[in-house]
Amino acid sequence: MKPGLAALLMIMATPAAADPVAEIKAARAAYNAAIAARDVAGVRAAFGDGYVGIAGTTGEAIIGADAMTDYFARAFKTSGFLGFVRTPATVTVADPPARAVEYGHWSGGSTNGVLSGDYFAVWVPTPQGWKLRSETFVTLANGARPRP
Image (cartoon, rainbow, N blue to C red; front, side, top):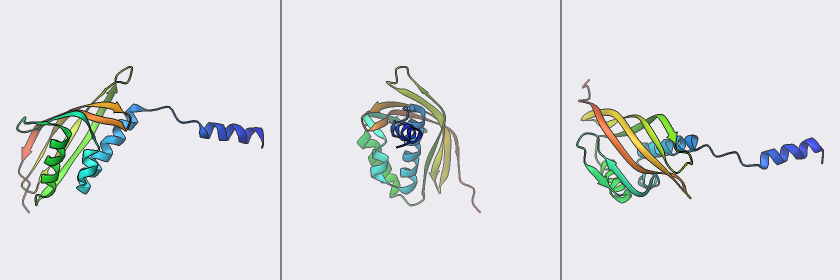
């Protein structure tokens, strides 16, 4: 084998350094895709142990990954449910990377009205990848959907 080819193969076989920010953004994208597809198992995969969600309009605490998964399972069966999209603005990872914080904008709702606002999420690393520990949503716009 030629020396240059051997070196190239060694470089290609070496795993890339982990990029927690990219991994968290990919996990967020997978969560958004699961919501869009009404995929209950995909939604559940985003949550880590001890998950807590705070609803944007009511401030209701949704305690536990199973409770949040049940929330989405019910929403997916509701006629007119349009879904939710969370768009990260910043992700900051602790040093060492024991947790990370994500800030961003969210939007969604139903045919009866569209909501939007900002959110704050805490991510933790697990053997299965980065998982959500908590999310807090703040509704900043709550408007009826325009009728044609």
